[in-house]
Length: 137
Image (cartoon, rainbow, N blue to C red; front, side):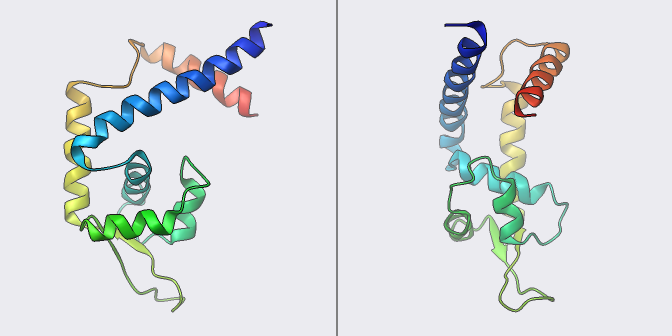
C-alpha cells in the first residue's frame, strides 16, 4: 500500500473516530451530531431566518433529512419555523433562545475540556486544514 492510499484510509478511520467522540460528548446535551450541525449552521447566520435548502446545502452529511432534523429540534424548543415574506411555501428557521443557550453550554464545555481535539498547535491545525483542502481540490 502506498502512502497516499494509507493517508486516505487514515482520514476515513480518523473521521469515524472523531464522529464517535463528538457524538458521545453531545449525548448528555440530548443532541445528535446532525442536530448539533444544524443548530450551528443556523447560529452562524446571525439571527437571520435560514431557508431549509440553505441549511441542507451546508450540512456535513448531505444525505441526512434536514427537514426531519429540524422537526426534532423544533419539538425540543430549540428552533422555530416562521412564515417567509417572499415565499408562502417556505418556512425558514430561526434559533430560539433555548437553542442559543444550549449551544453556549456546549461551547463552554468544549473550551474547558475539548473532547475531540488532538494535542495540536495552531500551526498543526493549519497544516491539516491546508492538506484536507488540497485533497478536496
